[in-house]
Image 1 (cartoon, rainbow over the protein chains, first blue to last red):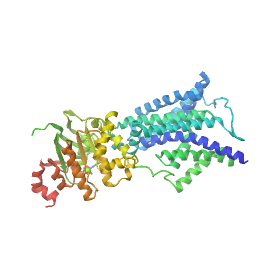
Image 2: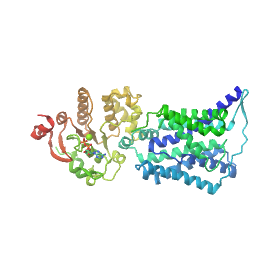
Image 3: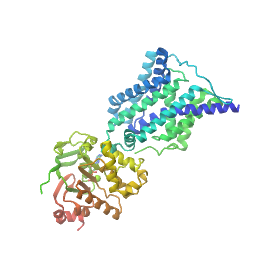
Image 4: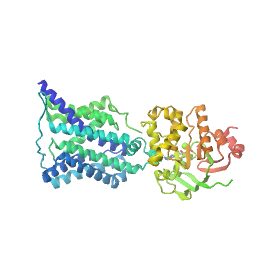
Length: 288
Length: 238
Ligand SMILES: Nc1ncnc2c1ncn2[C@@H]1O[C@H](COP(=O)(O)OP(=O)(O)O)[C@@H](O)[C@H]1O
Ligand SMILES: [Mg+2]
């Protein structure tokens, strides 16, 4: 029993790392564009399908498909931002919501139309990894390591490059950023692209162990929202910690309460956070 | 002395929605000058600077900088042409370090030049070098203003515009800011200064404009303005 508990706990951390990755994308978009991308989960879904079809049709290993998924979803996201979101960037939050929620429905329906409602899975045989007598899920471990590497690259980009520092400046104060010579509109486009690209990358990792179907993104967007609220809006560290906590919670609740309850448990936690620490663990209560 | 014209603002009208706040404002700044705009709270001083820098679009009028029209350009494009605004209340990037604030201040500067520029600024503001790894929001009010000015200088502006740099500072620190502005000007940087501290401003400025309820009501050499009865009564409390 103890061994099983330990295995479940490890699994929680592994999926939590992947959750942290897609949440960072959502949180970055929120920070820089001040927009809630309801379609974020659909970019995860697209990442999953692209990995699936590339694997099924050409035999390309899902990890290699990352080299296609990230650029593709980066450009798709950036183009979508430039053509639509940029037009409502100063509009009322209700209008912005209609736009990104509309994109959610559009992408889900396109997925139904082209790929049907069938559940699909990437069937790859991974060698089982054991730590002593503990068995660890190899696809989840790969997804976790991949997410950690991606997060480290993202962090490096944001803190060590000119454009990354510029993005953080826009996140803090878009008017001051424009005044020092940063093309804020371009930064919004790039950030949205990075955010959707990261969602796609996370999708590829999730596709290693999870079913793929048109509405699969809904589960993850709900988790991402909860993680953002838990960790704090706009907080990088908060998304990391929140991801791990929610991943762990999902694993443990599946063991103790039953897997069909995991979303209910997540919702309960969400409400508890709102009651006791509405600004999140690392949040400052939103900006402006 | 004949000085070449750097900035020329012609017949500017500016509205927020339907409310007009600037009426037919014209002014000019020549190379090397320190020009001030003085006026009470709400007169439209910040609106004027924001319009020059491209944050607000005028409903009519022209802004010409180095003989080129700026109308329709975005602020980041205007910065590239050599115009830098240090906004009211500083607007620092509080969660970025001092170093990162400066780095971002030099966003439009080439990589090779950036290091030189950074050295130049550190030389001017040694305190910022000492605190380069500190988050901007942990600096004192005076240090934050120094950082705001330093950040504005990173882009190598030909014209530096400051919006109430002494606002909210203790008298001693405020004096330092005025001295600094004077020093920057004496080293060749052209300055357009907006201030409410009229006395100190008229001491360092070459010329000044008085903005009242969105209209320029007086202009002239600082010395003359300081002797003007209206100015004395309204702004110097004499
Ligand atoms: N964003 C805004 N929207 C509407 N009115 C504004 C805005 N900013 C300033 N105003 C108004 O414009 C006038 C001039 O303001 P401002 O330029 O800030 O004056 P000053 O800098 O001289 O104190 C004031 O009446 C102010 O209330
Ligand atoms: Mg003002």
